[in-house]
Length: 383
Image 1: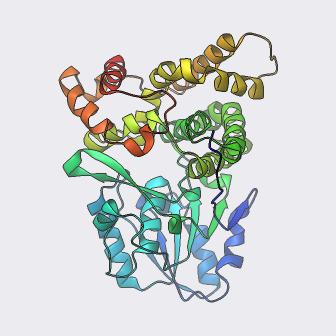
Image 2: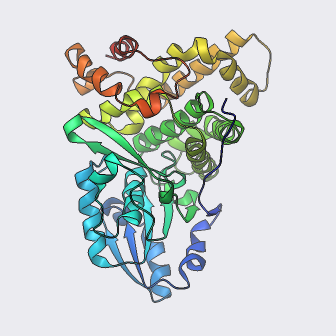
């Protein structure tokens, strides 16, 4: 556990029933034009309309920035940012999932022509915040509303890379469970398991510390208790609100600690094969946890003691129980557990290993060293 640690998180967080109505207070003074980063799908579902009505009521000009793909590469992100810069907005609202929030965060530090997204791949700290941001997640999963990270694909490397800059941490966050009610089950499940991965990886990270553990454990408690109901019952607003809060806590844990080999090895799956981030994490979750178990079983036993009523059993039994629970959740939510349906074969493993081993930013967080041969065995296990 780290001896020195810190906490970085959004400055203002509004959560709970009707939290979206706090938007009026946030933008009521000093804002001339708002850029709303969102998607056509969310607009068609009516999830953006309430925010627009509040903005119109205040007489503030606004523009919509759409067309951001679910797994954007840095060219996609730059295209959206170039559109944003032409609008000369002085406030950013990101209303959507992780990709939308990540691009909006990049826009907040790239509103001038001094740097590009590509420049930040080499030196993420070049840019500084220029536009205040409000993050309104519509999925309970990525935790992007809490982090200083923006994940973009790099096509020439067949990889996704995280741009990390503390200036991208949001100024405001609104967590309103109503905005997640109409999510299709497959998206709710994939993003929910992504949040689950954040929590369990951060708790078992080499960089875990008392601050990150507090948020990671609370996230695990909320997510494990609510994920199945939240993903399978559209009317379960309480479960969805708890998942949204749990995903936010997971994002805070990422900022204070960091994810591990699950995320590291999943990045090539998204970068080259465009498998949804939550799905690729779900596929790798159990294999990586089993690989790590000899080094993290005491930590998994602590998770068991936190979430289960019966605290009996040995450390080995408790650890095995948690891994089974993770595996069962992925199965119940009907998320793929194999790469076969994506037409990935053993012939592709060399490329996956090569790309995965480049994600040293996350691999160094793993309690157990991951060698290229270890990565190969893990990939082969899910083919």
